[in-house]
Length: 248
Image 1 (cartoon, rainbow, N blue to C red):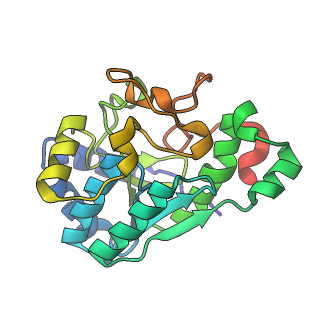
Image 2: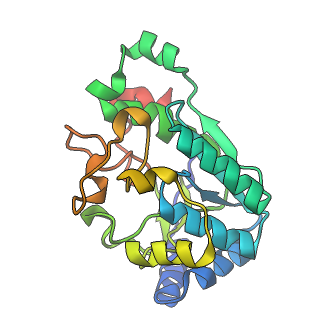
Image 3: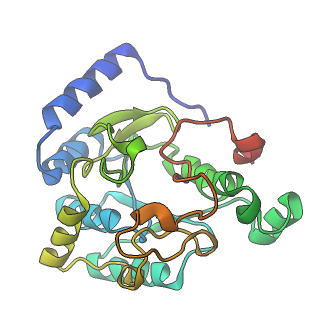
C-alpha cells in the first residue's frame, strides 16, 4: 500500500477546517465530514469504549452508509461481540471486521507463546496496526474516538488532522468532550454500551491485556498492566515498526 503524503495546500485546508470546527457540536463536525469525504469515509468502532458508541449513534442518524469497521484481534471479550451484534441490529448496518494476517497459533509459532505478555507493542502491531492499514486502504478519511481528556498524549489533538501513520484525514469529532458528556449522551439517547463498563472496566481492549480498575483510578490503568504502555499504536507516530513485525 502506498501511503499518501500531506502537501502544504492540504495541510492549510485541514488547519482552517479544524479552527472553524473547534467548539462546534460533534454532530456538525460529522455532517461536515460526510459532506467532504463520503463516499470514502469510515468510522472505527471497537465496541469496547463508550466514545465509539456515541459516534456510531450520531453517524447513523446522519448517514447510515458510512462504513463502520472494527479490529477483531481474536482476543475480544464476549461482551464486545455481543455489543457488536446488538448495535448492528439496532442501527441496521453491517460492521466490517479486520483480523490479523496471522492466526493466534501462527503468531505463537513465529514469535513465541503469549507475545502480549512479553512484548505487547509487537502484539498490537500484528493484531491491530497492520489490520488497520488494510481497513483504511482506499479511504479518504476516518472518524476516531480520540478525546483530549483521555490521556496527556491526547491533550492537544485537533478536531481534524492529517494521519501520517495511515496517510489520510482523521476526524476526532468528540475531541473536546469529557467522559461525563459521553455517558450523558449514552443514557439520554438509549445508546447500547459494553456491559463490562458496569463491572469496573472503563477501558476495554483484548482479554489478555484488560483488567478491571478500582474506583477513582486512571480509566486506562487497566490496560497493559505491568508495562509502560498506554496506547495500542493506532494513535501514535509510526516506529517502523516494532521490530518489523507490523509489516507482516
